[in-house]
Amino acid sequence: MESPKVTVRADADGVYVVRCSGEFDQDTIGELAATCDGIDAGAKLVVLDVKNVTFADSSFLNTLIRLRNSRPLVLQGPLPGQLNRLLQLTGALALFPLRNDGAQAG
Image 1 (cartoon, rainbow, N blue to C red):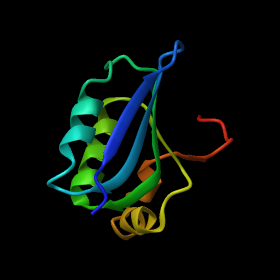
Image 2: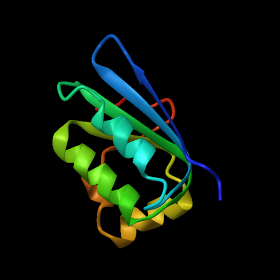
Image 3: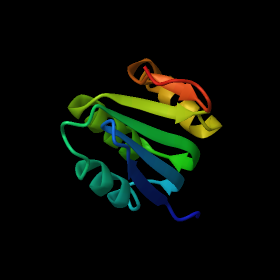
Image 4: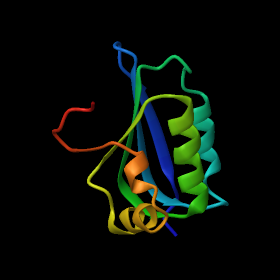
């Protein structure tokens, strides 16, 4: 199992970039959830960089949905295959705007 890593960077324009890598499940989601909970509720945008997520389960999806419901959220991709499949199978893919490297959030 690849231990999850989460880093956050706050830009001056109110955009927070959260980079995630590794495997996220019910036992390891805590760091991501705590990081996201610590982001200013008045954030203009949260960009969640998920391109290095190697595994995500329903607890990761739940964290994404909770974050999306509390502030503007964009997923930074490209989406890894397993995460893409999770979002497609659950019908949640349409809930999240996606930008690939080099594209503008919006």
